[in-house]
Length: 320
Image (cartoon, rainbow, N blue to C red; front, side, top):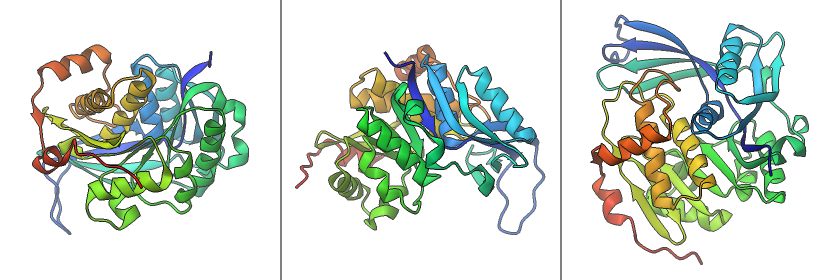
C-alpha cells in the first residue's frame, strides 16, 4: 500500500491580500480596508484541501528562506502535509502575490512574482518521491520537472491530475501523461484556438487521449468531457467574500473524488461545493472545510446554472 494518497509537484505562494470597497477605475485611487498576509499557491493549496479531507499528502516544491517562505512552511506543516522533499532555497525570496479583492463582489485581481531561483529541475525529483503515493497532482510551472514527474507516475500506473490556467512552453510534452485535465475556462480556448469551449475540450481529449478533459467556469460551475459525454455541474450560490484559491481548492476536492471513485457528476458537484465554501472567507485557504460541511452545502444550497452549458451538456461525443 502506498505511503501517501496524493503527492503534488508545483507552486506555493505567500499572498498579500488588499481588500478594497470596490476596484478602482484605471489610473484611479481608493483606500484599502484591510491588509492580510496569507499562504496560497496552486498545488500547495490543493494539497491543503486534500489534507483537510483526510488524505495523506506529500508536497514536492521549493520555498524561499525569507519570511514569506517561513509562513508557507508553517502553514503546510500545520496542515499535516509531508514536506520531506521541499527544498529551501537560500538567498531566495518565496513566490509572492499581491491580490486586490473587491469587497462588493469578492472578485480578485492578482499581481504575482516567482524568482528564477525557485525553479525545480527534473533531476531533483526521483521515482521514489512520486511512486510513494496513489495519485500525482501537478500544475503547469517548471514544465520539464512536472513532465518528468508525470512520466514516472504514468509508468507506475498512477493517475495524474493537472491544474493549468495558461499556456506554458513545452506543456504539450506534459499532456500525454495526464489522465484528468481540469483547466481554467481560458486554457482550452487558448490552447486550441477554438472559441467554442465544448469543441476545445473535444479537441484536447482527442489529441492527448486523456480520461477526462474538464474546465472550471468560476461562478457558473464546471464542465467535463467523460466517457463520450459532456457533464455540466452548476455552481453553488453562497455569500462570496473572496474568490482567491477557489480553483486550487476545487482541484484538491477533485483529487479526493478520484481516489474515492465518485461518479463524475458527483465529483464535479463535490468539488464545486468545496470551492464555494472557500469563497466564503478571505484567503486562498481561508474557507477550506471538511467532508461533512461540503455534503451539507450540497444538500441545502441553491445552484446557479448557465443556460448554454446546461442545454448543451449530456450530448454524446465520439472521438475519431
